[in-house]
Length: 185
Image (cartoon, rainbow, N blue to C red):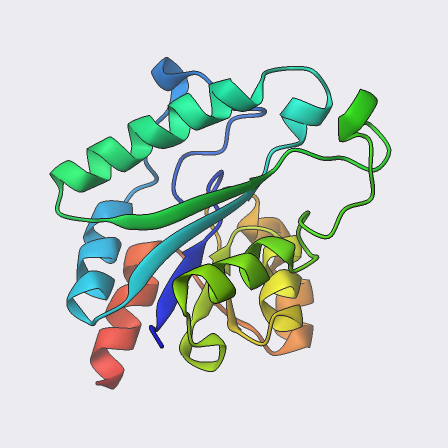
């Protein structure tokens, strides 16, 4: 079994922009590449799990999301960082249109995407982290039996008080988290 860092995308890997789907609007959060390199050297594999309700709302298509995700993976590959797989949830229970208006098991804080990653990629839940900038990411990690971490990038700073009450650790960036983990070794 592999130990993994499972990452939210928007607000964690890239700068939060409402309903991001265009390559020209993509910008990495500060320290993401550096943090991923540290974690890679520590033996972690990477998976991305992202809610994409913009598909459900009709703002963009699944193909648009796949194009952007491929672009991100290509940049990271050039940096020597490999994403094992990207999972996305195209649903929204209230604001979805047509087939996308469903209450699914994949939309975080549900664990469908994380469970699928564990099964398909032989991941070790107890030694894997779920990192994101939203309370739904933290809850998904907890619900999936992983170690939840909040980053205060994106929407993360809005959730610090709630996270403190839950006893979940938070960091100002992915790089700060990676460096803290490295110091523990």
